Length: 178
Image (cartoon, rainbow, N blue to C red; front, side, top):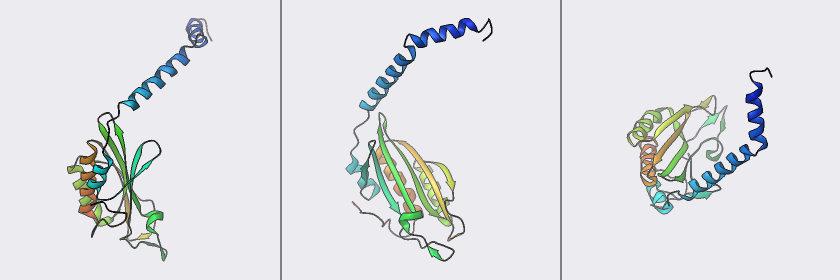
């Protein structure tokens, strides 16, 4: 430490010894706890109805919907992939003070990407990534990460519309609620 930085270092050390850092951490923890208490109450039954299937409450107050692509037959080097292994779409919701956030990963065939992306965007859902998890598979499969914030039922409706615009046939994997 040189002579000009020594007083600054001394002030920082004095504040640290006085417990300034601990007080800031305690205030942050209180703020986080208060923020958690003002989360909106979400009617998960209504969200399930909008998604057209049941979901499950996960640790951390996350409500998750599993959407394995049981309608696809995907192979890698003549080995058929199981839907729950590498073809598992999912969407999860968490209540916020403004409603909810929704995030997920949708498994899509090459020809399903554009219709899903367009319908999701029209419903206010952002596509945050599009990539592959598996190489050399037939047919080619993409993984689309999605994100939205706002009214949880509207989010679920927009996500379901995006899925329905792309997936052939009914959204059949999982237990339906409507």
